[in-house]
Length: 236
Length: 287
Image 1 (cartoon, helix red, strand yellow):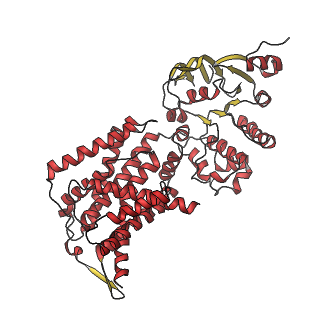
Image 2 (cartoon, one colour; image 1 turned 90 degrees about the vertical axis):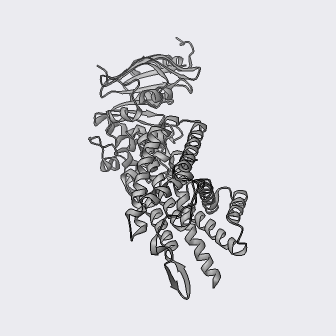
């Protein structure tokens, strides 16, 4: 049975339907990427899965349990967390206190403060600095570190490359090797298709709230992907 | 010399005003909620203090401890049973709710205790005084300032260094993200309201010892609280304390010039700050 399984998911913002009967699955230990243009419903999907968005229909199953109507904090306690879009650090807290907040619920696992500092050595020196003073790349490291501190079984990442320099993106993506090694399953949301395909063993492409393409990125052609991404016909 | 004494008395009173503002400022800072009933809770706490005062003979100030505990529990119940139900993007339901609670509280107190003016007995403390360099000051007003200062410092320290405090600060920063870390923000809100009401209750009892109160005093208290928070700058801890001092000193100095002025000069200073520095003292310092 997949770790995460979604069937017929619909999300409404008032009268506007953001997701139309979406379905996908993530196996334990797998890294899955979800790509799609702006407004395709990627962030809405993650908000629905984590329980932050409550206006939804369909079924979301996680580790065998139906979590469709579960409260967000209880879903997090069951081992699913998210690196939110825009990093959203606690601006009045220091780097270390931000990380500590991740460990607040006390789930056991390999991710502790020393482990995070080993993963992102740059953060060690910045531990007492106010999180709002960091650069974008450093903030993203703290945001990922904070999520890892919950010792998740499933880690959802929303647009972590957004607004960062290519060199920094490379540095940050390198951390996912260690994350995968620790047995965490990962869902990456990306606008950057190349990054998404390189990091994952399975890719879903969203278009206007539906899955327009799914498969192993090595077996998909760039042509197919771009057709699914932009909603145009594939050129032979 | 008389001016030094006057200003010192203003500072003593200002410490208490700061404490009155703290509950409101804390509630707003953490939950973005304006508790209109805060002033009436302050008065209700004074009545509870009055009822419990006979239990602490000889050490009148100790009565703040049981009153604070009772207020904390009332805050937990208020937030979990009522306010949490109306939380959302729209601020109006929450303002209407606390406005309604204020009316119920005020009329309940009139019904129960009557409209007479009361004061919490403090025994010999009431007239005790001490002298510094030939100036005489009241012991009670000075103690009240010390208590206010200690409470500000303690809350500040606790928010920074305890686990629960950190969780409250984080929830104030982003109540959605804390849920992703397994925090039930509604529970955090319950505790925050408990703390806010406990602080207000201490202010209410101390105010009831220094002066008098009636069931209708809540409106004045709420106004002071708003002025302290706005003079200080919303969200600034020590700005709020400074706001209280400014209000206290202006009021006492104003009364010296014009004994019938009441709170007027304090309101004028508030008004000027609202016009010339709408972000408050903290906003001026940040520039």
